Amino acid sequence: MRAPALYSAAGSLLLTALAGVTAPSAGGTEAATGIPELHGTAIAAARAEAAGIDFGKCALGQDMPGRMQCGTVTVPLDYAQPNGKQIKLTVSRVRATRKDPHNSKHEVPRQGALVYNPGGPGASGMYFPLVGLLPEWKRIAGAYDLVGYAPRGVGRSAPLSCQDPKQFFKAPSQSPTYPSEAYKKERIAQAKAYARGCAKRSGSALKHYHSLNNARDLDVLRAALGEEKLTFMGASYGTYFGALYATLFPTHVRRMVFDGPVNPDPEQIWYGNNLAQSAAFEGRWADLRKWIAKHDRVYGLGDTPQEVLRNYEKARARLADKPAGGKVGPGQLQDVFLTAGYYDDYWPGRAQALSAYLKGDPQPLIDIAGPQTEAAAEEENSGAVYTAVECNDAPWPTDWAVWDRDNTRLARVAPFETWDNVWLNLPCAYWPAPRQQPLDMRTAPGALPPTLILAAERDAATPYDGAREMHRRLSGSVLVTERDSGTHGIAGGPNACVNGHLDAYLLEGRLPLWRADCKAHPEPKPGAPRSRSHASAGGRGLGAPRGGAAY
Image 1 (cartoon, rainbow, N blue to C red):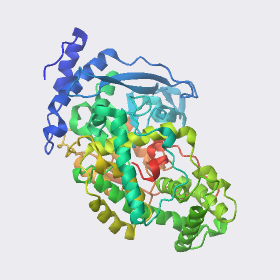
Image 2 (cartoon, rainbow, N blue to C red):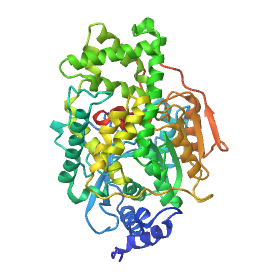
Image 3 (cartoon, rainbow, N blue to C red):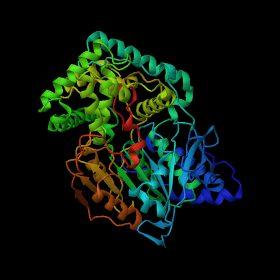
Image 4 (tube, rainbow, N blue to C red):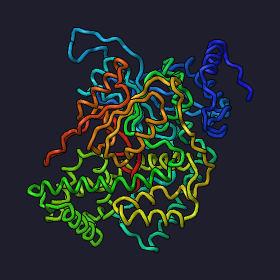
């Protein structure tokens, strides 16, 4: 591919950027690593470095405290054609405070920008810079500009859509644990229609929304921020394309944190990971029922996990017969208890709502489970990006018999989430765009600076095996495990041990020798749920799209 003629200021930057781009790593194919795309990334990064980001006032309602600034960075839609169509990604920033929260007279040195992605796919990180207001983040906020952004397709960043947002919420919905053949046929038809809608609304651009391009966009953002090397924190799905970045651009990495890692094994992307996720949610659902049973005096839902399950199924049957408030059926009940599988902060509120409903007061359940139609456009967009990225990233089974066989077997031992996860991802069986081949990401010893992996042992959204696999593949990485805990995303949360390792790494570059363990944070107490302060609070895990689990 012939490089375009750039003006002189960018010309030297282009040569520097090209020199820093790595050759395809072992195990990767040219289709995956993309030699033209690597060169296109260098060209786009050089342009971005020359242009910078013109930060200014954020959109109305986006910055309540008033310190956050917003801007845009331009990236190619197709990195193989860097002179072709361009799209703009929205970016947010709060400057480093330079303050030491423990010593007001001490000014700390600025260490550059910390870029964050909350996962999804389909989540926006635009609100991330506001975490600097929270106590757990003040030391990091003193040393770093906190930078969030909306990845391609999300929010105002060349947004994707697959259906009319007015048709997005289907409430009340049934969501049977053991679907009939007739119900399966209905959901197959819906999946085919949804895939067609994605193609119709996005056209030929649809194929360019995938994880490799998310990694390339991250390098352009790095350059636009004026950072020679990237300091990055990714949560959940953000760990996957963060690891892609580390594989493609290891010489551009300063420090990287992977919080709640996805299993990066190419064989698991994404069909296998979704099966593993459904199996893991069964264990987390058991954890929640055990906790509710422990507090039977408060909730009256049974003093054994089995009795709690019977009461849950009783509520499902009632809601199937008569939806609460006309809009909360079994599907909506399932959704709110699925989010409790992500974060134990939600356990008290979910248990209280279920208890009140069975005692004759449906309002608490309606309040937490009823569809919020004012958020329909945002949720539809988020779901569209989730689907496009996962479907574009890798081959999926195209024969329904494979899905039916694998998930029928799994549902016998893990019924809680299995079929809802099928319906979420089934459009990928009928996807109209070409698929990427997942990169077999591995870094050679010494090629990548030491990185930090954080994982909870009982995480259901990204099962712990994924953290171990990420640890094996990223040479020099260190794994910190929160034992006997299942919170999805543990950075900046209630565990002081975890936060100590995070601060030591980001502020001083210090890591344990190879791996370390932290005790679990305390279980929630019955009553009002505590507020969550960790960065992933803005991620897709808080609202799984259309009844299924996200990353």
